[in-house]
Amino acid sequence: MGQSVYWQTMPLIGRELGFSVKLITTLVSFSALMFLVFTPYWGRLSDKKGRKFVLLIGLIGYIVSTILFCSIAYLGLIGYFTFTLLIFFILLARVINSALGAGMRPATGASIADITTEENRSAGMGQFGAANNVGTILGPVLVAFIAYLLANTTIFPASFEPYGRLIPLLIMSALMLLALGFVFFYLPESFEKQEGDLTSSKFNFDKKNVLLISTGVLIFSSFAIIQSITAFYLQDTFSFSILMTQQKLGVALGCMALTSVIAQLTIVQKLKVAPIRLVQWSTPFFVLGTLVAVNAVDFNFYILGMAIIGLGMGLGTPGYTAAASLNADSKSQGAAVGLAMIGPGLGFSIGPFIAGFLYESSPALPFWSTIPLFLLVFLIAFYINKRDLVDKTL
Image (cartoon, rainbow, N blue to C red; front, side):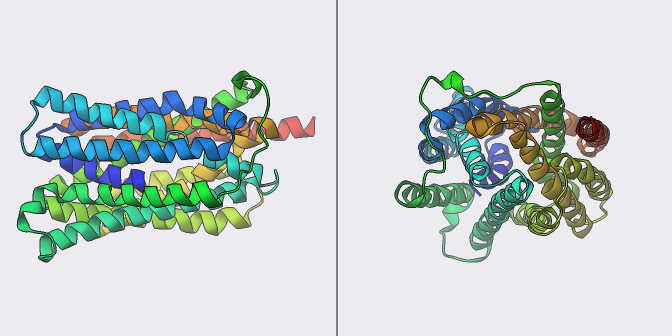
């Protein structure tokens, strides 16, 4: 929920601060790069110090960095910083958020791996993914609701309108503080702490895992390309105001997350198949959804396209994470999930950066660029699944 709020506020705040699309997406890419750099470290640390310890660091990092970001953005909106200083401090806040917040994903993913059997790993990761996507639904709902209050009520003074996009982030900091209390006092530790140095947790980084992580990079790069330009695309294509864009963006991303949750709580829970098959089956939904979105004649058709993409994410994400988890032993689940996060980390570093340049050439170009990437995911997943079947036969 916290990251989905960032995804909705960053493009619009960036435009109000005078940033170009390329600059905004480059800032997003660089902060995602920090996520990529630090996630494997946090995964290994959770195998040494425990999942709860790392999760607490991630929560504290999110709270501190979000308050810092809101303070800098507010000062930027009132003209306190020069343009160069503003870019530097915005980037600093986002880097802190990614570097420390990166601990949450491997810690929680490894916790799921700790308490599920190999047979139920895909189902467990599906539930984990569904929880993430519920947050991805609630984030847009929160942002859209605040935008509605700013535009249609007198709850907030008229002078709040330029700064209203910061309110959801401050609310998220308060919710994260509440989560911090729940984790500290009530969350049981799922991992028996190991003795020795951090290098004791090993993950077999063989050819299969390289191919698997490659599918993750391609999936999340494509997804990040679409997600990072959606706010700009809606505002420019359908001529929405900033507040209307904020509301419509919440609807589009919320519908995408909802269909993802549906897939993870139904299809993924029922099917007892190899996780890589889920990755393979996700690609037709990605391609179809992208084609519908880029050819949408109105906002309703765009929502339909995003909803179909959500079905693809609902299948692909738990399949990818579960496949990585099954390639590690019980003592290195944190390292496995941490290295598996190279996929989304690198994807969200590459995707927005590419999207910014493509979008300024043509708004439709980022969408079309994802089609060959999704087809490549299908081929790699098909190869991995075929090789696994041969290995089992032997």
